Length: 394
Image (cartoon, rainbow, N blue to C red; front, side, top):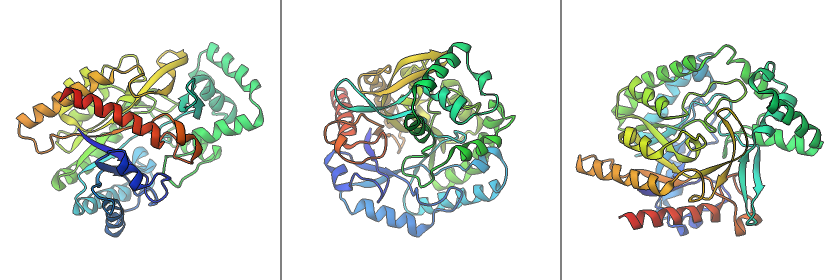
């Protein structure tokens, strides 16, 4: 697999010369400063590419993410204009040699955590999703209408107790952690913003949202195929419903339906072991053996279920890359087997780009600012461990 590293552009506290020292070969980046729904113009793409490639031998390998607007997801407002802008952005990216484009179809909130720097026993920190804290947010901070219907009495009682234990500063911090927006993005939402965005999904079912995704792909995939671009959909994170919103990319069955909906080599998967691995039903080897030919991009990270669970919803934290619920050794072996199959079949895209996703903050990470979940030392440790697995299996 090709070893890449997520870099958020000029706003990233980690510099490209530092990334080069990690041993990463390529860069995963996006133009976060361009508002969602607008065209990524050629000049901005060229500027970012030149910025990356000035640090040799790094290259811009993957676009993560070219975001899908809320209007497209709900098919309201300016969604048709946003689809045209998306199509034009793909054309502009292709002109500069970008061929792998990651996106997601999570409504309102992207990945969601309740703590961005939870202490670890080793002295480091990690991001955490605590189900009780999230219910506190939903019931008592957001005050979402009908939220009580989504949770068991046991979970509501635990949330009431937690709410009484939190002081005003802790309550504000919890709200900020959840509504902070995407890493690298300029948007920072308030509780009122989230509440307003939720209203656009009143009455939405998973089936309806999934159909909107398939409609979007029907519009975009032919353009991507003509351009030689491989689109890859990221899974829900976490892989269960939040705030009454449907989640539609949470497991093997969802991805099978995605691939069947629009048959094209341009319609593919971002295989994120950390997001999918929160579910006890996730089998990474089965996933790769079933849909491996459609995997265009890989996020290798690990999560550990820890704390209270309620049905298919679980508390978890970002574990060491080799220390969570997912067997990453078996996962890497399955992916390398898939690469071997591609080579034998003559595929030019046989090498799959991967990156060490997220990471625990360790050592000097604790003394410098960073994007939540994207430390230097913690991710470098993860990359080194993954590189060791690949070397042993070569």
